[in-house]
Length: 324
Ligand SMILES: Nc1nc2c([nH]c(=O)n2[C@H]2C[C@H](O)[C@@H](COP(=O)(O)OP(=O)(O)OP(=O)(O)O)O2)c(=O)[nH]1
Ligand SMILES: [Mg+2]
Image 1 (cartoon, helix red, strand yellow):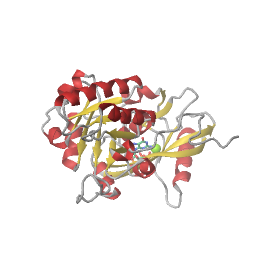
Image 2 (cartoon, protein in one colour; image 1 turned 45 degrees about the vertical axis):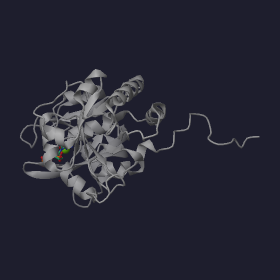
Image 3 (cartoon, rainbow, N blue to C red; image 1 turned 120 degrees about the vertical axis):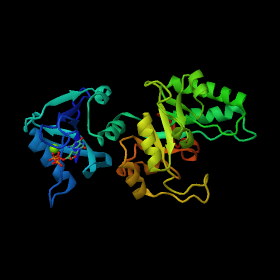
Image 4 (tube, rainbow, N blue to C red; image 1 turned 60 degrees about the horizontal axis):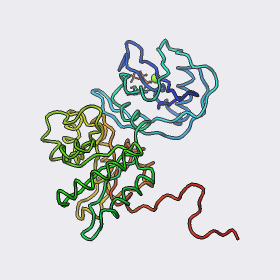
């Protein structure tokens, strides 16, 4: 159990694991192990009292990360802390730091914490575009991209299989502009040259990922990949992917006859690497809590997001007003 404690300026409290223990010297979210007979909430409240001398109000679950370490397996269950009484102090001699959220990645943390920091900082939905249909006009497909962005999507993969090259370039150019206007990450599937031409990130299908020797784009360019097994996940970690997509978790209409992994197998694969992982395959936004409970960064989907209703404009009702 660990807690995300945030101060009025949005900084997060990290503490440093003391010498002589497992993972000594690394920074972590304060917390500790559950004792027999305790609920998870009781355990977290007790640990934060013992370690920091504060009485906390426990909030929403952020993520539960299953992680394998060389000599043990861990399920790190992380909760937001909504409020606390007392002034946090290192009661066990541990160092403390209040860290601005955009600096969290600079702290050396245990492997299980990388998905936790990503859950705090990065989008929980990764939308993948379908190709335009044979009679679909460019502007209709681009209206679909605009609808995704209007619905709050901030990480988007342009996947345009079977689209002729000039048209693909046109669509990528226009979609990249739409994404940039709202500071969304836009990644191009499988084409490093086209991605670079339009200042986009790169998303590699598994086959291309396996052929990679090193990270093919600069550190500040988003880089993701699609994985279906543990070897591919390990390769993604080795070449420095920022995040990956793993699935299919459920059976989907787009891949008939391919059985879903299920959430337990997803979690068992997730624990082998320290990467933010989106679950894909027959999932939509209503599965987010379940995904987070199995260690996922969130959900990736094609139809699940593309087909979603546009979000109503703020302050306006949909349909006819009932007010006379
Ligand atoms: N509290 C906390 N623990 C973490 C984080 N990341 C991470 O891998 N862990 C691991 C370290 C510990 O093995 C376990 C938390 O238990 P603990 O805080 O009681 O640690 P401990 O030293 O008493 O346990 P151990 O190393 O003797 O197994 O979870 C994190 O961000 N916060
Ligand atoms: Mg502890």
